[in-house]
Length: 305
Image (cartoon, rainbow, N blue to C red):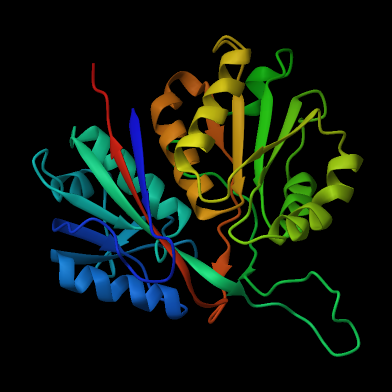
């Protein structure tokens, strides 16, 4: 798999002048989402709204209608130029769409992501130092069809638990409240450092350090917050430590680029329950961020040899 990254130096969308046959997108909840959808409208022949029905069928929906894996695959053709608008799409939607493109042997997929200039924070005049952010409403952790591992199969063969971490420390707390059987597993935490802006990494570190100490994480590692290729290589490196013979669970609780890397990694290694996913399906808050910082275009080329 090859991943190339094109990034702007500022808020102007000066990315390669490309046109796409087909684009999938979610709902815009803030300014950067609306800016991304405006670009899609100008640069794509067909746009399809996409969402994951977490409250009902636990399936992907296209244009508001329940869609099977086969129906989704039928939307994709190997010769198409496909764009996934990752600013507005959630992690689970990206995972399903990337898997469908891989199953259909699409040569490659582009992913667009727009960084926020600033995240919304819960702060008052009395507590200007507070590091709580209004980014999402969390839900229970539960599996995603096709990426679930039965942990009871590995009671005598502990594996590796890897989590990308962001501002919302409560998500890791909730993961441990719900997930049992990870005590003997080797545990890795990955932070987005450098962050999108200088000093942002302090928020993620401060909001998660107590949980890392409590649950005795074996390794804390770092990867730039906007790096898909770097995060993908890091996952591959951790996986190779076990020689591919021990299970590995990934919890993408950090940045969207790290979530994209997680999805690509899972697609490559999901067979025979060697890797799996734990995820809490957060609901993004309205106006969770302010303005646009930078634009990124990630170009993924699959290797089918």
